[in-house]
Figure 1 (cartoon, rainbow, N blue to C red):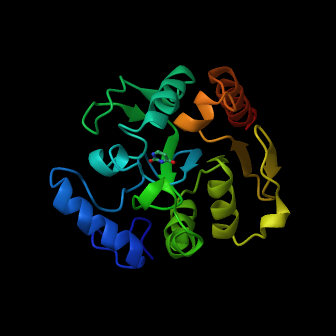
Figure 2: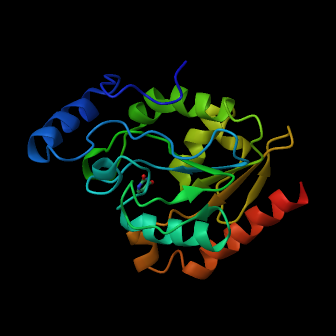
Length: 212
Ligand SMILES: O=c1cc[nH]c(=O)[nH]1
């Protein structure tokens, strides 16, 4: 099984049609499934929802060029999970440290909203991404869609762990799942998620990793 879909992945008809439309409208964009970013040897996996049209779908790197990426990459740099400088482009030289970033759905969805069947179609890639990380200790899920997709990828029921901001769930194998509100423009503009709240989550993640 592949941990990243092939560039011409055809599992989701709606997303394939959107990809073809975007290739016509924006031929200079990446316009393909966005692969995970960071080493499979990392202890931290951050799971987002799906690439943004003019962000990750343009640059080909998760969260890169997306509004949500500004807060995410700044926070990763602050907490030592990245080095270099984030400059909203895949060739900015930023590298992740002990951290990997992926999305529950790898292709950009219309209106930024994947449907259930698309999350399910992409689940094997998330499952394989998790399975190929031997040192993985913490999975940080950004938002309830990523929370549900990650539980499903782990073969667990949604009812086995309730999504909550800064909530920690033991996965029973020494691994933990931590929840955070998604660092989206909507959530930060409405005040549902502040920078301080997001930092609190990363402080907790760092503490869990440091505790071993
Ligand atoms: O969840 C998200 C949001 C923006 N960009 C991504 O790659 N994922």
